[in-house]
Image 1 (cartoon, rainbow, N blue to C red):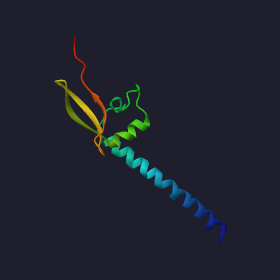
Image 2 (image 1 turned 90 degrees about the vertical axis):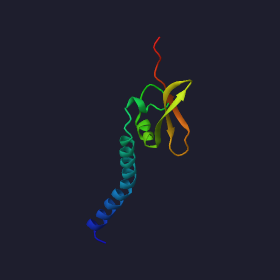
Image 3 (image 1 turned 45 degrees about the vertical axis):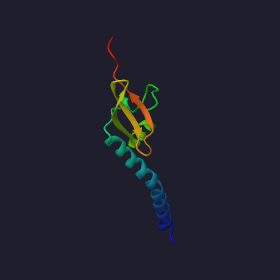
Image 4 (image 1 turned 60 degrees about the horizontal axis):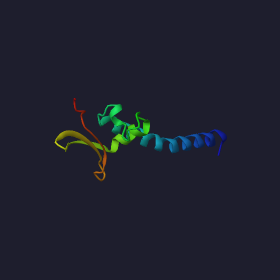
Length: 94
């Protein structure tokens, strides 16, 4: 095995290994982006800011209207099992 071939093989192997998680990350980001949520809307645990992890979780979160005590609200739920992530209701005017 010649030195340039061996070096090229190592570089190609490392690139292939890094390409797999990069592809997963990009695919996940595209899926999350296509959900159409606003950046502030993706603060799933109501900590006051949206992180990259919150953004990536958006790929697994759906949105549906619900009725809470006679008020029309929006429920965010996990697609996999339907567990509620959060419910957002419009604030009532006093």
